[in-house]
Length: 401
Image (cartoon, helix red, strand yellow):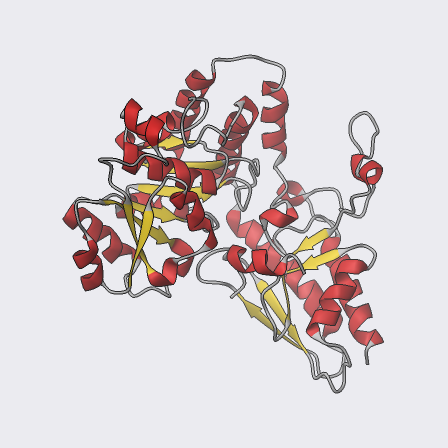
């Protein structure tokens, strides 16, 4: 199933109203001073029918987020004081002990791991990752949960201990075990599911960390795993929450969040010093969470389905074309569309259609990772773009008949 990991492999290769109103990507985008920066730089904009991938600049920030960023941009504050206040507000909204805003989910992984390894000990904080003398240096993870983003964990100088079963996990626990890492998107792939993983962590007194970066849907997920008992949970800020792409959330135990803060910017001589978050991202992330928990999620879902059906209606008359709707159970749980055809009747491969959509006018990016269909989703589209996507897909397929 396409996800943020698969995209890293593939990347090289009717008007709405109310909360959904926005300018179409095909209209001229200019700044308040009238400059079209992308045009000046020769960078092409696109319609995003792929999803919230970092390589595609993830999501577009909500107006409330931009208001917060603009407000904070011309004022000075003491950064640690703001970190404290924003963390308290987010923790209250998301019903957890404590929270911090790192510079994304990967930065949350680094800060959270450092908290489990070095704690709040200034000497240990200063020494990781190059001098791990006397520190716990192992992180237990299911073999099926290994993924590219665990590099952010390994940045702290730890080694990954792979297990497959609960009994293997229990045998792997030892005095060097610092943490147990869980990749939420792979919950169905591993033999140890989330609730059992938490239970095993509690049994052995080992902190459990859930990377739920792309799993802010439904909104209840924002407190689901901390209430389940995970000691730390990471979310991306710039995906479905539609906050700053250079921000995220680390939620969990008060002592671990306090330690994570000590291992992160603005503190110097720390493994997380380079993962800076300034006042704009801090308040912008808070504003994004405030808007997200108040959003009419049922109406939003209905709009996504409407967009999908616009495309289905456009292509259904083309010979041999079939469509299938799919909602991933975990990670980016929004309506996705598979479009398939008999290549003896529509004489084009799926890869060729993806290429034509990307290189056409306007440029349209579709979801990567599927070799048996044209695959797309619609939650990042703006007003009027579903109709544009439908027209272009129909044009490309009909031209190959």
